[in-house]
Image (cartoon, rainbow over all chains, first blue to last red; front, side, top):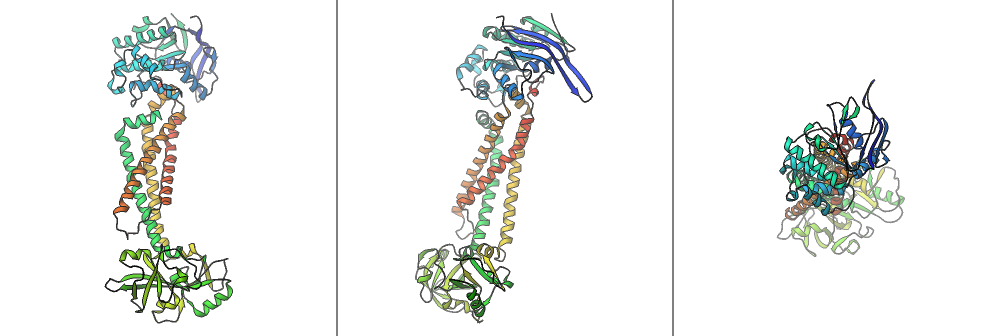
Length: 224
Length: 355
């Protein structure tokens, strides 16, 4: 329970734009442990999405370290980052971002296909049942409600048995009741499967479901 | 494989339409290739199948056998310079033969020296060396006009009676069947001129002859009046069809790829490599092209069963396979445009955006 899954050490990110450079993240250090569900909130332009992109192995930091399960990924090449995303991280995006031509079950099997693993139905069905979607296995995304789509996205994020779940405003396209339900489900899955999770959100109403809340402003992080 | 097939299955209409366009263009490509080949064949088969390596014509002929004329004296002069066997050739066009009770049929006579001209490919009956006086070997295609072995026919120019002693394979000139006969038959003397020949045929090393041109068989084919012009324009049509079809399929896949940019970002964010996505596109391109090839191949085959037999259409397996291979290659090359787009797609597209 005490082992740190995610550890950030003196993380900074600067974007160069010709002569002017913008420092988006300033000297961030932070740790998330297994079984912990943390939220990051902050006004737009505060660097939330950049932080999530760096933790999610989509961007590399300018300076500092990103340790996922004691592996420093800050200097990785893009191929290595792709493999980190595939094997260690589960993403939940703002809009569910499901592939329109795959059925609910196939959305999950796709993760195994990309990872060149044998496609086994059992794990996909177990995950979907757990999220209350067993009657939707053969439906395409256009037949699902917003909440259902986001639940499929949650199941997809857990499919590759990642160390860490990253959620990018998962409630943005949902009404408050559905949004709360979705965050509850993320919390439940994180606890029952003993993963670490980090959620970027605007939505103050779901913060009570998180173990810790971090505020980010002007690229600096503070805990409340 | 997974993505490629699921997508094809889901967007049936879209991909059926593109497969239909490919089928239609391919059908046209096959058809015109077959026509070009058939016309070229009918025009030149008899020259291609001359049993010799070189053809000697006079300078004024500009490589056209029918435009050349050699006198007896010239033939003797050439004979002295060449080692081994050679045969003069006399081509008599605008001739026709008639069998009692049947209609006239246009033919072209190829008169050779049957003692020295090598054996040729015959479908039935006698070969060159076995020909006796007034016996001829006609092209197999004349069987369709009702000519049979041992038929007695009359040459309409000279009134001579000839006997069909054999049928040859693939002997057409200017899309008219060729009849092989011995120079002694005299059908080439119809116009009352001195004994003249069109060319000397021989095999062996290339000889530079003063005052004459020595052609290879390929050069002699190119020299047939109108041959390169016909083939050139048909080939141009085929080349353009290839380019158009490659463009249509490239642009189709390019637009679809741009359309899917957001999805591709998501795929990359959840760990798909560019290679994984590219493989899926390549499988789709290959599959649709293959379907187009099979369906249009089927149509072309069906069409060859219904078109009249004397229509100059000829699609050999080699031509069919070559066309198909080139078509697939061009489509895959065109797909590289989409590959570039996939490689440029950033996984970051997936973050921080609402659909």
